[in-house]
Image (cartoon, rainbow, N blue to C red; front, side, top):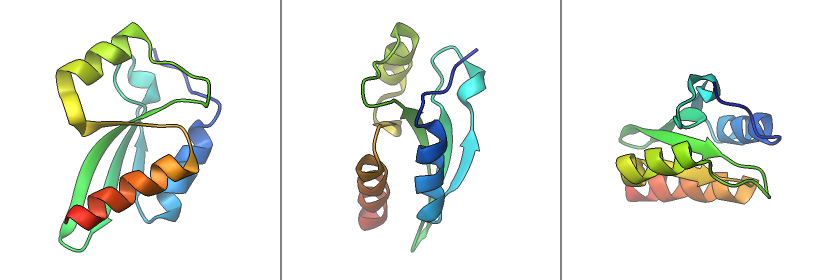
Length: 94
């Protein structure tokens, strides 16, 4: 089973402040990302997988493997700025 990083609740809140829907999946384990985030766009929405890491956090081998296998659909965030940049990048591409 997965564990929460210290900033997990903050990251969830920051996505919600940007009008995203967030589903907490940290307990899935096995390297699966901590959050499934729906980013609303002008054209609809985009579903993202988000791995939350604290400022000094590092990826576990199972997380590294998941990201390697699933690729760019997984975003690793640590700060409010990371969340903002992630959402803005998606919205500007739509």
